[in-house]
Length: 79
Image 1 (spheres, rainbow, N blue to C red):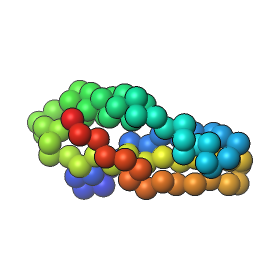
Image 2 (cartoon, rainbow, N blue to C red):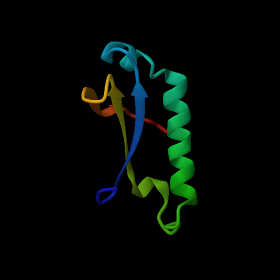
Image 3 (cartoon, helix red, strand yellow):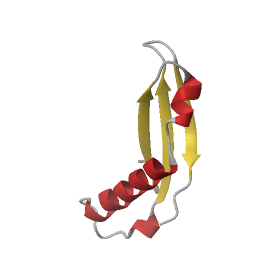
Image 4 (cartoon, one colour):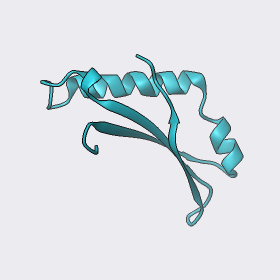
């Protein structure tokens, strides 16, 4: 969390970065977005509604121990 932005990060280990990028489906994005909303609504700071937070969804694709790709703000989620 940084100020009013909560980052939710999906990590994928795949043999190539391309396979990692294609492994994030629309269904998965929706499921992760719903989980993010649930987290915000059930967190200790319940006084703030989820509309007060900006949600950011990142993806880390790990190819090996030393090679990874970070997709910053990989998708937007509309609740």
